[in-house]
Length: 104
Image (tube, rainbow, N blue to C red; front, side, top):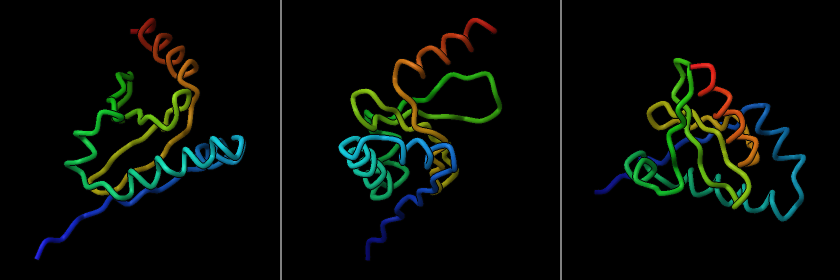
């Protein structure tokens, strides 16, 4: 018997607010990305080309997951728990990361 350990996706308040503020078409794409996350197991998730580890100056390990061409899901992952911290525009994420690198 083969048992799949799917990921449990939890959406935090900033991500929930961002999702509600998107146009319907983008909302559907983000929901599709969330479904992809839920139907993955940990091994599949970490091999997924859409997932990238973010280099940030904090204790928390954060990841970026491709939601749409322009939007990224910001994730923290703990065992089979995924926490969607926020949904950011790719350009804004790049600016945040480059400002973090400037402080290093």
